[in-house]
Image 1 (cartoon, rainbow, N blue to C red):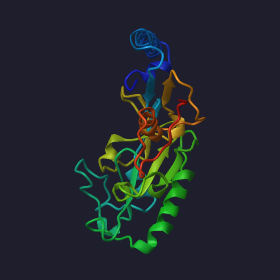
Image 2 (cartoon, rainbow, N blue to C red):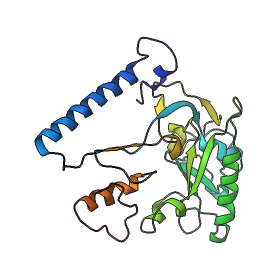
Image 3 (spheres, rainbow, N blue to C red):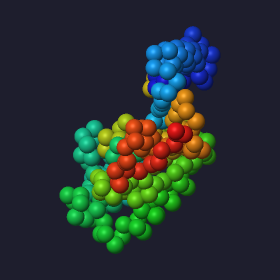
Image 4 (cartoon, rainbow, N blue to C red):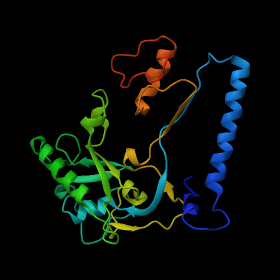
Length: 253
């Protein structure tokens, strides 16, 4: 899907490869379900799940370049950041930086080695950055670049929250952070066409790339999520989930 998604956009020798592959998978699933029924009977529970779906990746987003443009990230000298991980960043004048495919971090005092953002500034600065991300428009299409911005407190449990980004960015359909920005670079452009064969992706707002949940039992939840999978399996075996586990069983017994 990553490599062939672009073939859905235009006719060509590989135009049907994605749909054909999914048809083959559907046939294989049908054979597996029938074999399971014959070998184990109808009391066995079958679960087929995917943690995400897919969408086109047409425009590549240089988050660190945008942070620089907005005054949140500074470089030493008037040049794009090089290939060394954050090698040209002036940390004494940088308040936020992007790292990884969806993460944005504050350059926080007491956490980052050269942190400048005091704890009392955190909420105000995150609100400012979040609002500007949601207002960001592609200059070519006028479409929003970002659909969702989550604070880590909204989506992560307390046990590992301190390891998470301060903001998790849900890009709009067709947009994904660049490999360069994910590795700490800041090219001159903020948004460019994606010329690569890697033309499909899922590092976008979660509701734009929903996963799949199939079962031979009724699914009781209207909106099951990835966090529901583990408690669902535990419930099938009569095991109580740990207190810190998120999610709820979603299959009818």
